[in-house]
Length: 540
Image (cartoon, rainbow, N blue to C red; front, side):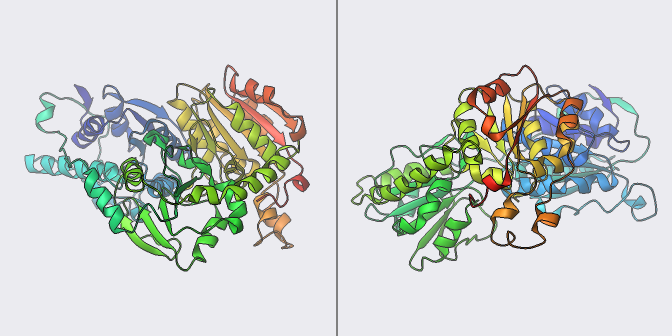
C-alpha cells in the first residue's frame, strides 16, 4: 500500500475503516495534507470536501445521523479546530459519534510564535467523550503499540454505551509530502475488540418491578429525540401506559407530545413518568411535571451523571430503548387501569384546536400539516431547524424519520446537517427551516457537492418569529429591532448561485401539488414561503 510516510496518519485511517467508517469530511490545509492522503488512499472510505470548517462539521454530523456510522471530520492546525465546536457540542448532547481529527504542529513549536498554532489538545474537552494527542516521533515498536491503543480507546469511547464525539489530535512535522510503501501492515495496526454480554430480559423485568412499575399504575412515557435507526414502536402497549413522543423521537404509534401538551390541564397526572431520548422541546410539559409533587420519575438510558429534569427523579435504569419497551409490555401485560382512556377528552379538545388552525390557509400550522402529509414515500428524512419550525412540527405524526439539532438547540448548522444527510441518502432529504436559521447557515449552500437529493422549505415570517411569541421577549420594545429583526438574506440569489431551483409564494397560495413538485424536482430545490407575522401570533 502506497500512502503518506506519516505512520500515525496511516494507522488512524486504517483503524477508522476497521471501526466502520465509510465517509469522511475534509477541509483544505497544509498541515492536514498527510491525513487527507491517508484517508483518500484507504479503500472504501469516501471523502467529502467542504471549505468552511463550521459547515463541514455539521455536514459530517448529518452523514453520521443518516448512516448511523461514525464520521471523521478533518482539519488543519490553528483556529480551524475551534470552528468545529458548535457541531461537536450538538453531537455530544445527541450522542452522535463524530470523530474530530485535527492536524497539529509538533509540541515543541506550540506557543513559540510559529504560525497557525494554538494549544489544540483539550480545546474541546467539555464536549467530547475523549481526547488523545499523538506525537510525531514514532520510531520504536512500543510507541506504535501505544498509538494503536489510544486510537482504539478513542474510537471505543465514540461508539460505546454512551456514544458521542471524540477528538484525535495528530502532531505532524515537516516534511509533509513524503510517501512510503506499507507491507504486513496489520501486524502494527489492529482493532481491539470490546465484548459485552447480551441483556437478560427477566432481570430487566425484575428491575422495572423494583422501580415500582406495575399493571395498576398510571404510567406516562415521554420521548425526546431518538435515532430512527432504532425502529422503536409504541404499538400494543398495555392500557395503563400512555406514550407521548416529540416528532424527532421517531417512535411509531406514539401520540404527538406537542399537540397533547396544549391540554395538560385536562389530563390526569400519572403515577410514574418515564423519560427516554434527548431533551424536550415542550416547555409546557416540563413545567407541568415539575409541579407534580407526588410524581415518580424514572430515567431510561446511559449517562455520565444523574439527570433530574423535573426534580422528581427516583430511579435510573440503564438499558437500550427497545429492550426496555419490551420489558414494559411484559410487566404491565395484565393492566387493570385504562389510563389511556382517561385522556381521550383532552386529546379531542386538542384535535379541535388543530383542525381549526389547519383550516386557515395562511397559518404555518396548516403549511406544516400539508408538508407532513406530502412527504410519505417521497423523503428519506425531514430535518427541522430550531426556533418556530421545530415547534410547529411537534403537532403532527410524521410518516418518515424526523431529525432536529436539539442537543444544544442552536440554529447554527441546521442546513449543513441536512446537506450532509443528503450526500449519503438514496432519496430526497427535506429541510424545513426558518428565515433566520437559513441566513445563519448560508455556508451550507456553498458546499461544493450540494446534492441533487437536497430539498429546502424556508418559512419566511419576516424575522425571528419565536421572539414575537414567547412571553420573555414579545412585549419588549427591543424585540423587533434586535431580536426578531429580518436578516439581510437574498435567498433567491444564494439559491440560484447554488444551482437550486427556486420558487417563492405567499403561504395562502401553497398547496400539496407545489410541495410534491419540490420533492420530485430533478435537482436541489428550495421553496420560499412568505408569512404575515400577524398570522403567526399566539401559536407557540
